[in-house]
Image (tube, rainbow, N blue to C red; front, side, top):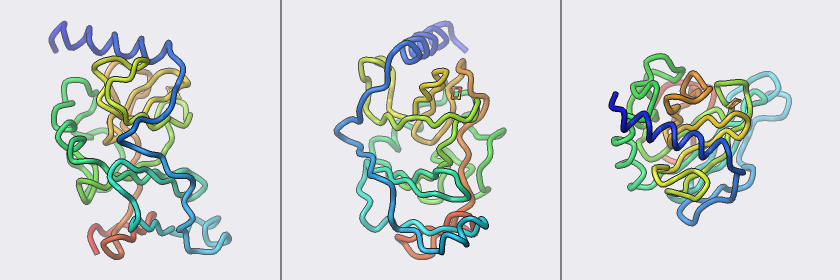
Length: 197
Ligand code: FES
């Protein structure tokens, strides 16, 4: 790994760790907690799969659902983001997701079944804080090299928009991608594997 890459990464990490978390950029929008879960509360408590309706999800939007008491993010990525993900490799600890947890169908660059739709458990793999959705490119507090991703304010871990962890930060692993499958083109069952409907 070149000194330039290490320096760049260190700079990005230090800048992120030292600065307060701010708002969400124009291209991406976090949508309030989803209301598209079908099973009863009792079923949810028992760990049953939950359904996410992404029919109204626009590129750049992220919704949250609850599965087994954990937050699960569903993000619709932009075309620009998909291009950027290919260029992140040098910045990441486990770019190929070899050590990280995801369904076999999501062991790829986008860590997803469909490239544009990304799901992840919204819990930092360091000590369990909830990372913040930071999709904007090069915000002041995260630095000029930031391409959009997730920032954990507890100890400054950084993840790209595939939930892949940056090298040189406290979190050891990529964010977990939960088992899921498409029931239809726009309905995803979280907690149940099987890939495409
Ligand atoms: S809990 Fe996220 S960086 Fe420590």
